[in-house]
Image 1: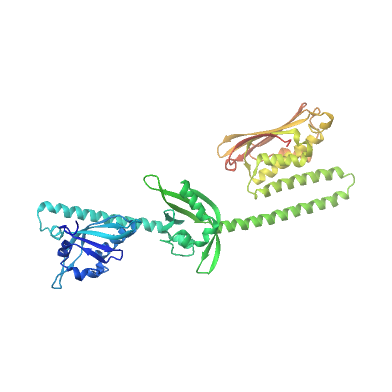
Image 2: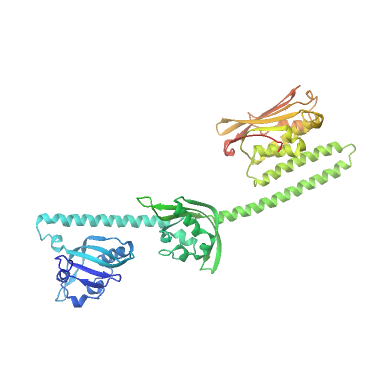
Length: 490
């Protein structure tokens, strides 16, 4: 059908060599079949490779091979050599369509060309002029789209984080920006499958992660994930740490067509955090050694004082409470300690087997290190007083019913919240207010802060001590509030 068509048709192979043309094409191009058959298109009809005509036509044909879709050039100037050797200025409208094999791969390109030189030169009727104008408008829009595409690609290339687009389930790199190429040792990965371009990541489980994302349609987020990457310039494999996301890409019908890779190289931050962790561990070790030295010096000092056994026990208990608070903060890398954990640990270190006689309740949230140490010391002093004089002073084995309830609550207020802690003892011997204040009582009255709203009230009710501690705590330090309530019998 194409052979007898009055419209010009030509068939090109994947190298853009001419394998067939009809008579209309020979007439339109003023050429002879035996002279151009088998010739590359750009040799049969030569043009300056730097010219716009050459680049437009080559780009259009390449797009057909890559995308497998038809390409239209609404208007292109492509000059043709006359039989006398001179060049004839020609304008064309061309449509290039893929001819695919049984496997769906582009095998040939069928190009339909229309000579619109007369239309472009205004040598036809006025009603045909609209076609040229529309073609020019389409061409202008295409140029605008090309410029916009270049601008977006430039922004993509300059993105501060690493970015890559993977196509299909074989995960072939379509695009990779400068930060991504920097991450993988400046390797040129575009056009290659991940397993080909970065073979070292296969055994590290990243292909399986991509498979999970492609299969499930759910993104995967990695935090400070270690990855070993080959640096060919340095001829070695280096460990990097990355924050990244594998985000599935869907078409209009919701089918997964690829994966978007976005992330940051956080190796410097991870190494700094590791160095900080080592320094904190060294500091913790030195503080524990210092506490041990203080305890040894105290033992020597108290040993020279008569009747100092009770004072030494008190001092050791307070030092142990301080060490317990320090150990709690150590476990959190001195970032924060939770209120419930701070109270519980201090009670367990002081009360021993009597912890079953405590009940804790209130919202759990984080405390800054200084507040956590102060609270631990206050709880230790209150528990010590309860063992000596209060609800825990009578043995449970002898039928004593003394119990202690520790509860707390928060009241919102601007940039900080008001924390109220109640320590209530019941079931112990009758309580009378002491005639003098010891060090422990003074420590309790110091409270958790020095703000105008901070205070400590101790009510010596005959039924049992009630100590209320009020303090301002930073709102930013709360974290997620969760209600907790538990007897410490487990």
